[in-house]
Length: 463
Image 1: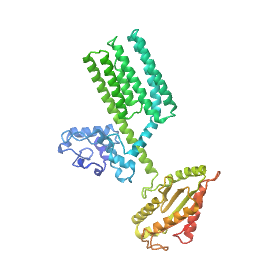
Image 2: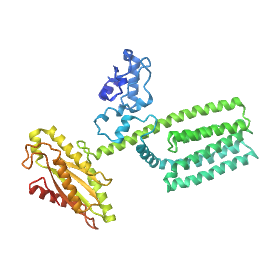
Image 3: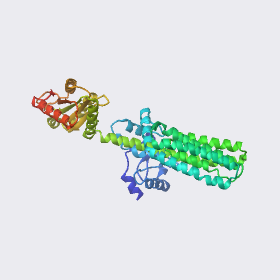
C-alpha cells in the first residue's frame, strides 16, 4: 500500500539538491544520499511510515543512518515544494521557497510583509489568549489560599492582583486593536509580567511550604511558545528571561541548590520541547504565507507572458476607477491587438507565436512601471495597458511609443499584409470617472478606438 501511494506522487529528481542524487529509495524511487544498504527493510518501513504520517500529500524519503544520517527537519518540511517550482516564473515568493528559510527569516522586503501578515493572522489568538490567561492567573488564587497562610498570603495576593491589573490593561488594548504595532510588545509584557509574578510567588511560597508547586513557570513559557502568536526568537527571549528570574528568586529565597538544579533542568527541557514546537509552527506559518502569496500571484498572472490576466485586470480597473473618481483624475486604457496573428501562427507555428507574444508582453510590461499602472494579456493576441492619472494627449503618445517599440522588435511576419514585421494596433480611451458612470464605459471607448485602428489599415494608434 505504502509503495503504491509513494510512487504515485514521485517528484522530479531535478528538484533535489545535488548531494542527494546518488541512489534510489526502494519505496518512492527518489534519489537520496543513501548507500546500497538503503534498500533494507528498515529503510522501506521508515519511508512508508513518513508517507503515511503526511497523509499521502508529502512523499518523504529519509536517509539511512548508515549512509549519512537522517534528513534534517528542514529537508523533510520543504521537499514537497521543490518539484513544481521549476515551472513557476521568477517572483519573490517562489525564489524564497527555493532558497529556503530554515533560520526562520526571509529577505528584507518579504520579512516585513510576513510579519505584517503574521500579526494580522494572530490578532484573534491574542484576544482569546489574554482573556484565558487572566482567568487562569486568578484561578491560581485557590492554590495560594490552600497552601500558604498569613502573613505571606497577603504578599502573594498583592503580587497576583498587581499582575492581573497589568493583564487587564494590556488585554483592553489588545481587544480594541487600535494600535497594531503595539500587539507584540503588549503580548511580551503580558507574558513577562505573568512569568516574573509566578517566579516571585513560587519563591515566596517555598519559604513557607516546600511543596508549593513551581510548574506554573513552565505553563507561562508554554503560553509564550504556543498561545500568543510570538515568533520563535521572541518566545525564546521572554521564556529564558522568566527562567532566569525564577532561578534568581529561588536562590535568593534559600532553596537548596540540589533541588533548584533539578527544577531548572526540568524547566529547561520543557522549554526545549516548547521551542521545537514553536519552530515547527513558525516554519509552517512562513510556508503557508509563501504558498498562499504564490498562489495569488499565479491566479492573477498570465502563464505565457508573465503579465496580469483578465481576472486581475477587472479587479484593478474597478479599484482604480473608484480611486480616480475620489481624486478627480483621469484614467487611460490602451487596448492592443497583434496584427494578423493567425497568419503568423499559420506561417511560423504556434511555438514561434508564443515567443512572439512573450516579446510583445515584455514591451508592454516596460510601459507600465508605475505602481498603479498595469500591463495585461486579455487573451489570445489581445493586450491592454491601464494608466492612472494621465490625459488623452499623453495616453496617445504612450500608445504610439508602444506601437513603435513592438515594430522595432523586428519580428519577421511574412503572412502580414500590413508590414514585413510584427505590428500592433492600439485603441486609446481616456475618461475622468464621474458619479453614475460605469467603468465598462472606458473599455467600450477603447474597444471602439481599436476597431477604428484596424479599419484604418492596422499598425495604427487611434484615440
